[in-house]
Length: 224
Length: 224
Image (cartoon, rainbow over all chains, first blue to last red; front, side, top):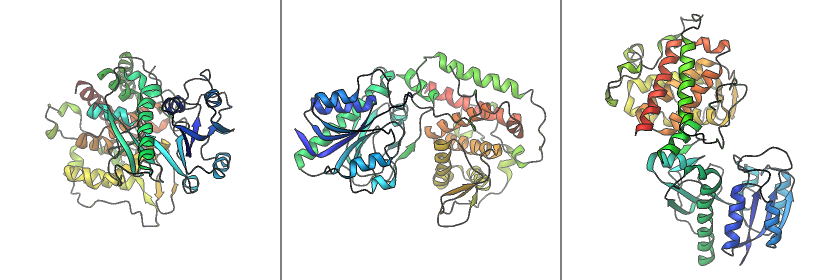
């Protein structure tokens, strides 16, 4: 099934790769992709290595039309322009790690579907699932439409997960796996109800966390 | 392996993103890093400005800790004996700059006078500074919230020290891991300044108490 109303902003990250794979496996094909190409020699946050299979190969082999943008910055004019003239109203957002969409993009009339790695509204911010594991021994993921305040948009769907047996797989595999599961559930719910419905309209409480220090990350690994 | 303190973090901020897993030895290396710095501290020259009030602001030595968390005396006697009842708040509607040092001092005094109440009443203002530090790895001497500007120096080590003491007290009171995360990054910052004169503005014993607090907090978390 091609999702005519939905596009994806994807990057050369393990998360974008897993998102696309799961979408294709679930036969939920985005109508269009804006591909943020990394033409630098630098490995960007979220990027596993320069040697992994190119995202464009997956797009081509599945006949997903795309525009390759020579920019890794989701807020760049090139990305803005590539998206503005498209008919899709909603874009699944999967840019490079650490990027935050700015006001101009957020107010451009499109919606950005983001899958947050943490159970909202309790865990906002970055690397939440390590904190969630240290506090409660559980993981979570939640789908939201991005808003100006970080991780505070209304919650479309959220789910708790059992942590993996080996936390070393979290950054590049497990985190993306659980996010993609929530992404698929969110899209299925949308298709079934024919509207975007929310599990929780208010998402104002909770705690905002910041990139976990490697020491706390190691403690989490060793506690597993 | 524990290479987060090798370069001056004020000049070369650490992102701490996507850190690798090294196993249990990483935790040993962390302790080694702290022990080595504490050893060097004892050899530092006497500080030039020992009349500054920072001299009296210190976490109490952990030797006073006897297993009962509620009875732990978390600041020095000098801080406890004063009468602090007015909490200076960051006024978001005010177009005037606020002085970070003065506000931190007020929050710390309030935390000493009203430990339990302080968790709730200073959270918003403290979290504003935690966010500033976590995102940019810097804290400026002045902020204007309405204009969204900052001014003054970001190298005032007394501001970072006061911030570290306050975050430690609030971690002790709330057990909120986001504060422990910030403490570890602040101690990394202090150690990274080892070769600069900046660190000599803070009394060695005060830094030792801070590191001891961090060490014990880590041990508790590992054993929890």
